[in-house]
Length: 291
Image (tube, rainbow, N blue to C red):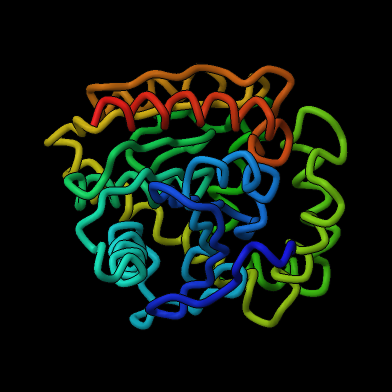
């Protein structure tokens, strides 16, 4: 990690990587990632913004939630408190919020509960709980390859039994499946993920987000009764959710733009950092000027 980026822990034991100068942009990765998922966006973002990249509670080096509640309404409140505390004397300062994958699950209820704090919201290739289409079982092969983890990770005990000691094998297979090209994540990033998720209890804490998926979905459907008005950027990898992200996000927001990132699978920040940085900076800049 370059010395100009500060690695620290915020309120509630939330690990953060912070750098740059300017309006704050909060970055949340998903599973099986850590804050380093965004490391190739740090430099371009730092020229215009203060970025705050977080490990979600229980993932990476962040402590689990104290009540062990992994529903995204609770997780987002924990993180919103950590950011408010971090901004200190500027605690009423608005910020931009960005989430990928499980980070995308978290940022929607964060925005729904703290919309007045946000300048904008960006969701990257995330199947936000409560807004997936209904599927008939057995799933067709393509759908099963894309969504198998939602069922497997939610099972009690079995995921831990089958993955213990085989984290590298599982995550290697998972990234090769979910990226447009093999080795979509840079070696240093991938090794960071392996290190983080090979620790005792780490895989289980990740599974807890999936075990809470149904609860999170019910919460989100309630939040969606009052659609978001904050500007939202919805991006999907062309060989993953793609432009379907825009349709999904319109299920809970009124001011939505976005589309597909070409030559990209599910892991947008790692696979196509330059393209994602460009789209993100254009969107953030527009919503800075409009404030």
